[in-house]
Length: 72
Image (cartoon, rainbow, N blue to C red; front, side):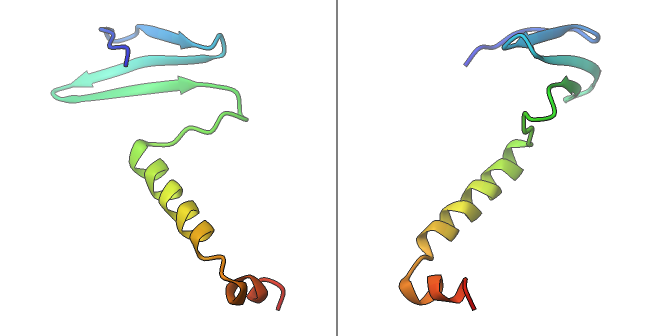
């Protein structure tokens, strides 16, 4: 993991096409802005983990009986 210090208004660039800017700092909260191409998905970590768990559950629920239900 790369740890950086940034002040309000400062940014960093990832992969030449994603810009992350510190918009505001209040107490222990930091507001960030992200500019990225529309084809780059951006999720909060907790949402991403839920999506991954749901995808994993869907993959493990592929018994022949359940797969047959897809075509009913």
